[in-house]
Length: 212
Ligand SMILES: [Zn+2]
Ligand SMILES: [Zn+2]
Image (cartoon, rainbow, N blue to C red; front, top):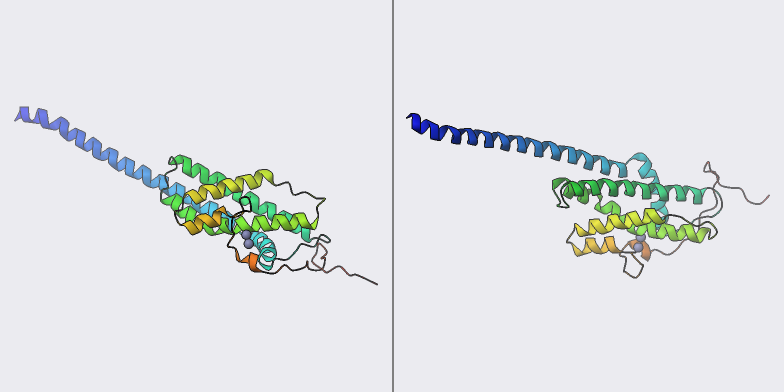
């Protein structure tokens, strides 16, 4: 009997230790996933704040109406601010998403899948928005260059990385549009006839009076 105990006891201790390790590992995985989901929530929240909604409205109105920017008054400055604010938001999203990817050696876990699904439409929409707004900003004042090189490069990295996460060819095509403007862009804005700028507005929003 004592001989049997000598053999069985260590094996029993090993099983208990292994079970404890499994419980600890499971708890660690659960808490890491909770932390990652919290990061995902924060990254998505940055795209839908009130300030982001205002900037999206400023850029979206021009984009979807295919309207030119009035170089006089406050509009061009407002559009420039909204344009860069949105670029910075996507820069923040790219940095956070890259950390999440590195943490799991680029294998998409539940948190990354959730993030990618949540931000896909935002990123895909801005592939065309950034391109068309940049054209309109440039056309409205060719003496005032839009220095957005680094931020645009970061946005391009984001959309390329996001495209790698999807197998759907339609999603990949949307994320790849306007890369060098030889690709077809399916955005409906390209079917809308161009409109002239609105009358110039003062910074407070009141129209500028012209004539006597
Ligand atoms: Zn487009
Ligand atoms: Zn468009």
